[in-house]
Image (cartoon, rainbow, N blue to C red; front, side):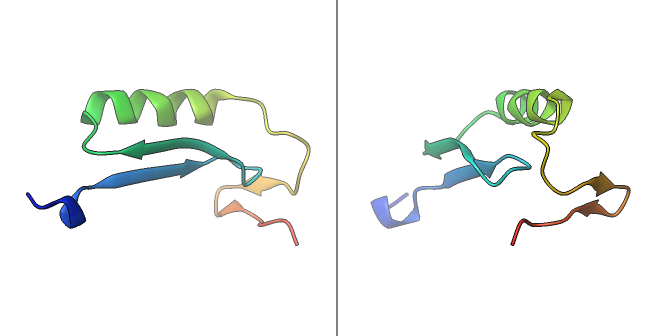
Length: 58
């Protein structure tokens, strides 16, 4: 794999904060664990979320 083809991952929380900036490949279980922990966190008081998703702050 050439350097320009290196995968990267950016994960943002519900409040739009960057929570993970990973350069290179990441194990699926590790990625799933990070996402699961983020989903389990309390929402920070921004716009409400429902079954259709979260409203992006304006």
